[in-house]
Image (cartoon, rainbow, N blue to C red; front, side):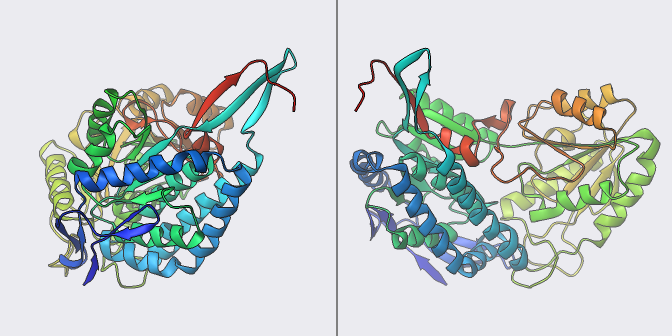
Length: 479
């Protein structure tokens, strides 16, 4: 068993102020794979104090110096890729091949995109020809609290740390206590890269403890949080007393709108996208809206595809999906599957209970519901498991109405071969992101949502901007 009972504060590994052990459970086996310590308020205060003390010096460095350190971090990241993959596979259940390719790959991709964006970013520029002595300066927000989830750990840590570092912020990272091991490896990487003491700090803890302490801390200037809408609401309320900046990337209930002229792989692609990472993605296409003329065939195809998705141990190589992260999530998903059955949706694949042959581990059957309507619980709530809800529609107007009839607004998907319709849908769907015909967003595109899916944007130049304040200077003196 791995023991991680230290925090990274002010450039050093430090023992927690008081013992508070927490068992990290391997969801493939339901057995502990590590024991960590959860921080106390004293640990939180030490980390924030270190970040505050380092802020002036770090802000004073040039963007080129900060970019060079992130470039060094990328090289170190490459050398630690297998360590990160093994950690994430054990602690949150990503199948090892998927962890290597997607979980690890996402992090290095984001860091490279930040480097590219930063080299073109104007941290200081003239206001305009009409005001030759005015300057606009982009400077760091200050001390940033970074609170990250368990489902895409390196994806979210790099999106926050990379942007904050380049912006000139100092930071305190609180990773999810469900998946802390990868974050501690990342702290080792930051140390090896040579970031000055206090620029990056890590304290393990839960949301009620360290998370709440950071959100309310008077010396924290910004909170960047990824997680549930419920927790995002609590963080916003806690942060309001100190009027700190709050960036939230929250839940989703994405619609995948498939028109009659969609390409022949659209349904299969949508099912497999939904099942990726065992459905534990906030931008998952969890509602499949299908035009009536192809609906029956789509249901048949979806059931067939789901039936071929295999489920297995995250430590085994292969193209299977793994378990969900813990017993709490497993129970919630089982309850929602049963709710779908009770409310009258037609179960065409999967269902309650573990897949055949898997008696231990938090495994969920790849599940498809057909003949649902948008008022059913399975169409309203974020299930966060391998469960797809299919809803028929007749017209484009109806599809837009159903897709937008949700408190969330993260990612929607459109499948059609008619360019004018695709463009109309892109403009009218109320979400921070829209993807067309299986084409992902380009490198450095902003990630984030509307409504109860949060605010702010992560990735590329938009991600850097979120950690910057805009300062207007009049009467700039020529040097």
